[in-house]
Length: 163
Image (cartoon, rainbow, N blue to C red; front, side):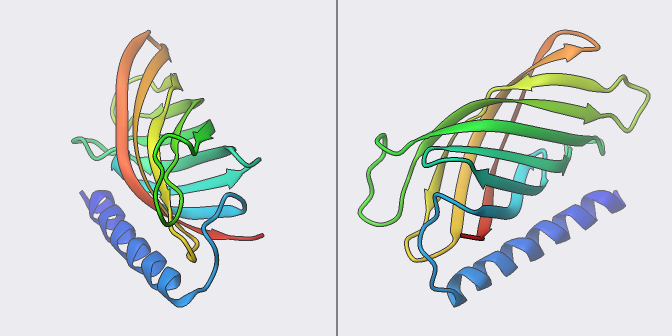
């Protein structure tokens, strides 16, 4: 219970900090650099994203499950962004998809899980701001200790620093 409360307060504080930083800065919408933020959903926790090219990135998170337990999720994905799907007048609004991996460490007497993630999502990169909002749904095929299908998903925000 303590960890869930701590995570909720961290997520709220991190979101408020990122919004305040975005308001006070004069950067451009990013397709490069390094982003730090928070994802809220299943799982919830800090997240990062590194652009590796104009349309490709690697993201990941160290997050906690809030579905009645305190499992820890570590995941990393390779993402491809399609900027032509949703055109907007200001900013950028790509659809993204990719493949990655997840390790889930259980807090109870269960075996830890290793699986393959297939994230699909949408992001909004604000104009004249280093902020990115995103939403994703992630089917996961757990491979060990048993093969089974699972799902994650959430919304998040990242603040970009760098280039």
